[in-house]
Image 1 (cartoon, rainbow, N blue to C red):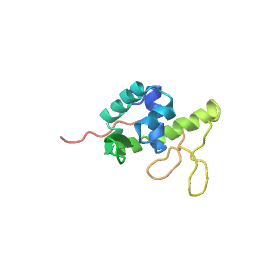
Image 2: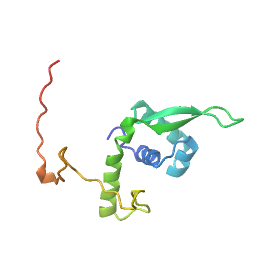
Image 3: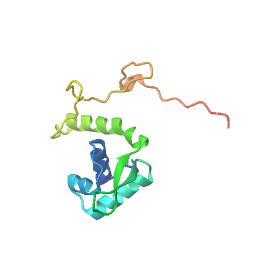
Image 4: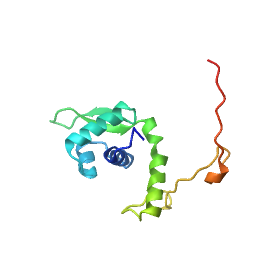
Length: 133
């Protein structure tokens, strides 16, 4: 939660999942000031969720855009689960995630590595075996 615990960091990541990559678009879509956007984006880069890439429009100076790293992409199921939870308990948001292949609503679900659907009561917390150093 320290990595994405602030509202602005969470919203910036949400926008990155939606395909936003340019600084001005992040600040505008999230509705935060440019200094706050710059600080949060810098933090998200520092922890490895986003990375900077230079780009240059013809006749303009070089600027940076922000793209999700593999670490950032792996965070998407967490966002999907939080959206699903919010829709159920706080009321539907103004948008819904849909599978672009069939239009079905996207849902987060717990499964074991053998494919079984799980509920909280189906899960045991066990110590990991120690590995030899």
